[in-house]
Image (tube, rainbow, N blue to C red; front, side):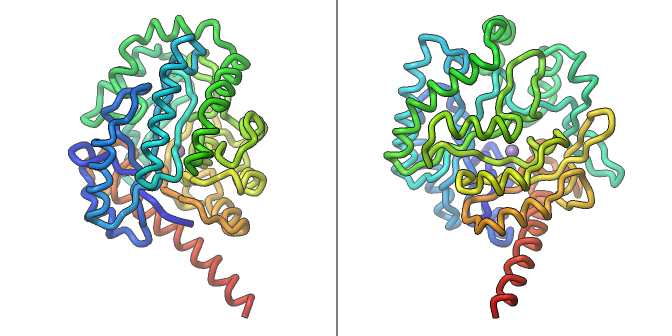
Length: 358
Ligand SMILES: [Mn+2]
């Protein structure tokens, strides 16, 4: 397991790389050019700047999250080919600087969705929260105001430029069924996977968060069967999954350890996080500890260990603790605690295996 840490870039992330470097076992950053709009080709100059910054702390930049997919690609519009060409050029450039994994998602309009970014937990910390009833009754515009408007920080996937034409986008998706979205994903993969293969890059799709349809938009990367289908769309070692225990874990029917066992060789990047699911369908992001949520983090880490996992892993989100002022879900402290919990499980499993072999 190779531990990495999501970092939003100089001037955009309050956490300095000098602090990231001090979290035990963190070897690299998970990064993106957050100021480049979806569909545009990433400029080499900007890519190299991030590499220089990471190099200074001997952190690698092998994992990118995300190269966002333009809506025209998800909608299957004729204009998609231009954006797909840009995507290919970006893959080639990222390979040149040593990138191995590119995370992306195929969620229409919205990336991850929550109804509250600062919901208090019993211990006085706050965390990202999803209130089912609210999500089902609030308008998309209200949601955008809440997430994109209420924050001092830009939120990944909630960039203003993407959400400018909200009503047009919803109109455009009216006639896009889940099967259409599968077809559009297949078209995209058939174009980019050969380029990824040539460049020794793994394209790792992130599951939908939460793993069900919101606002009537189609969503397809939601469970084991659908991940299996995704991997078969283009059967290539470069067509892979970012297995996110937090996203998939919001549906109690998803057994993530089972998914690790089935898809191990197609998971180059693990997102590990716990969520607590309430009976009414609400869920909140908790600490990583198994006892604190509904997802059995121990079982998941054990499944990775059993399968000899050598891919990258990161704590997915964290709570906001110790009065830290941070991008919602992306503070330093709770993610650092999460990393130590993951290492604790991993090291104990590793040690037990060594003792057994003696
Ligand atoms: Mn995730």
